[in-house]
Image (cartoon, rainbow, N blue to C red; front, side):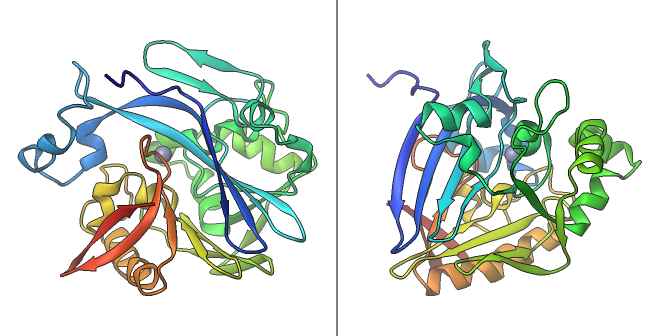
Length: 284
Ligand SMILES: [Zn+2]
């Protein structure tokens, strides 16, 4: 008798000299077919039979990470809702990132860098408030140039996935710190352009003295995607996603890195173990 999990949750992870707060600021529903992309329903349905609702939708978490190093504090992801808004309808039960931090006892004004894994609506929605003003006015947004360019694309696919008007106005007023292939915004943090899910999807690698943590945004949103071939229908460049996951999963498995997932509700943290030409996820 579990019932639905509370929409919000919080967990502290110590990596050695670096702490990470993993916050779930809410849940929403996604069509299961779009999340499993190229995978036939006969393969995925048995895995989620207890989770999908009458409309074949999965229960998805909005997970954020707050990384605190000796030098600074950074926020990975900003969720779906603009700052100041909350939703508790049948499909979305969530806080904005700013309110989620406050609810977790973390001062939003202490955030110096904001690093969305990519700029889709459910990851960049909390960068601004409903009026379009920066939700974290003291912080700098760090993103690959390719993702910033994708937001400005006139493609109808981009227009459906990004809140183009809000992000363009926000970036015109508060210029993001753009990078090409890699960036080290902190001595303990490496950002890597991977692409795949979106043209500018990035990996965040946080290195403590005892453990390394990897966050891949929607390249690894749920544990079934530990098979590199299992990508979503939202992946703009599926072939790039598969190759990027194959490579960085191998690195994570070899280093026994902790891996956090962007939309997993029940067990969003664990490690990857090589298993033939795929990987298995083991929750920790
Ligand atoms: Zn997402």
